[in-house]
Length: 261
Figure 1: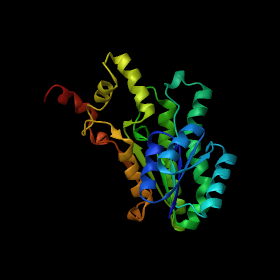
Figure 2: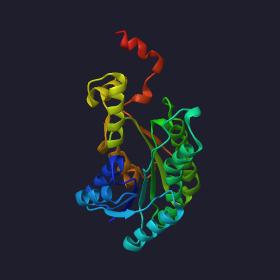
Figure 3: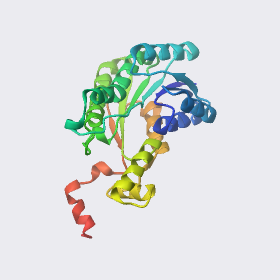
Figure 4: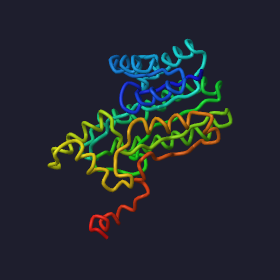
C-alpha cells in the first residue's frame, strides 16, 4: 500500500484528505501540533497520528524518519498546514508577519525538504494546499496572501528541480470551504454584516461564485488524491483552483449581474 503524509491533518481539509486517502487504501499519517484532533482522525480513519510542528526542521525531520521507519517509504506528501496573517499592512506586526510565514510557507518548505529523499526514492508526489489567496488578494490578509502566493513559487521550483528524479509537485488553490476555521469566519461575518446566521454568511460570500456555494472539504480531498495518484502521472507544476468557478469571474462586471442585466 502507498503511504501519504498529511500536515495539518487534524481538522478541516487535512482531516478530509486523510479520510479520502484511507478510503482509497493508502497508509495515512497525519501530522499536527495538537493531539486531540489527530486522535479523532485516527479513530475515524485509522490514520497514524504523529505530533509535529512541521515548520520546525528538527520536528519535521523526526516525523519523516518515524514514517519511513514504520512503513519504509513515503509516496505522497500533502502540505496542508496553514493559518495566520489576517491584517492589512499597517496593522501587521513583525510577530504576526513571522507567524504567517511560519505557518503557511515555512511549514510546506520544511516538510517538503525533509521528505524529499523519500519522495525521490519512491518517485512520489508533493501536493501543496495554497488558496485563492495565492492567486488574488482579499481585504486585510497581507501575510496570508503573501505566503499563499509564495507557495506557488515553491511548488513550481520543486517541480522544476525534482522532475528529473520522478517527483511531481502541484498546488491546489481552494476557495471557500466548509471547515471549522471558515465556520468561525462566517459567524463573525454574519454578525458584522447583520446577517441572520452562518448559512446566510456563506450564501453572501459565494453569491458571485458560479456554482453558488462553498466547497465541501471532501471535494478538495478528491483533487489531492488525483494529483497524488498515478492518474496524474504527467501532471507537475500545475496550480489547480478548486473554487466553484470563482477565478473565471470578471469581477468588474458583477455589478451587471446584481442589477439583473
